[in-house]
Image (cartoon, helix red, strand yellow):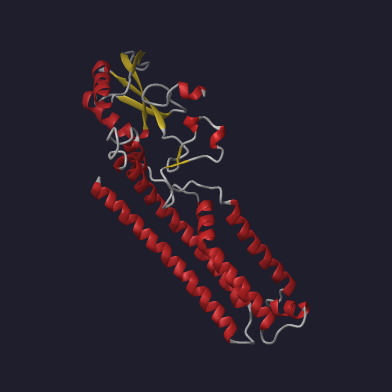
Amino acid sequence: MVHFFRAEVHRANIWRQRLDTTTNWAVLATGAAVSFAFSEPQGHSGVILLNMLLITMFLWIEARRYRYYELWSSRIRLMETDFFAAMLVPPFSPSPDWAESLAEHLLQPHFSISMLEAVGRRLRRNYWWLFIVLVLAWLGKLYLQPIPAGNLAVVYSRAAFGPIAGGWVIAAVVAYVAGMLLLGILTVGLHEASGEVLPRFGFTDHEHMVPEKRRWKAWFRQSSKRRQLMALIITDKGEKVAERILQAMQRGVTGMPGKGMYTGSAHSVLLCALTVTEVQHLKALVNMEDPNAFMIVTPAQEVLGRGFNPLQSQEE
């Protein structure tokens, strides 16, 4: 576990460095565009607008890299909170389902943060400031060079971009900047990602209005539950297969009589509820006892009872 933890930290560090690289590209491009625009008094302000589109592309690239960073970061936080931290305090054992959560994440990797949240978070942390610099530089260019504008008509004429009138260009820039501002504001409430400094648990905003047991919310847990499945095993060695599953997997098995309609032979039909991380183990156990068994694994909408979600929690 120590070596695995170090490997995941190394992965996260690599993607964190890639985040910094993308931000450096954006800062250098912004500085170069502003310097170039103001170095020539007769130069066109459109270079700043083109750089704004380039910065948007960098924002998209960085958001994609941030999703990969959060993929490894969520695993690290899971091991820190549910394995290492849990073993330092009573009862000195990992959380009950940490291993299955981590195993499912390894078998079926999925991003722990949406692209929309990633864009909004990187926009608020870094790119808002770059857009502010570009807008102020663009307005300063329109007003100051080659000489200070005497009225708005001069500003409109300088803002013209080829055949596009200056008024339309200014309106498009205002709409674009307003859209970016709204994107950053509307995504503030999205908290799917673990982040780097968030605590293991967090209180709700109205903690005095909710029951005590509902105040805590594990931030790093996925909102969707792990996939639950139902396996049907048709075998001539029902007792042995069931005993093997009971002992090795600690999963309940229900046996029913069945009949093969093609051969007319009697068979045992075993039903076993399990999670996605246990499928391979079940296949191996069935194969050990009856290589000729017929096995069907289907998704289950919900499994309630011992070993899964308790029935009483659904009534609350």
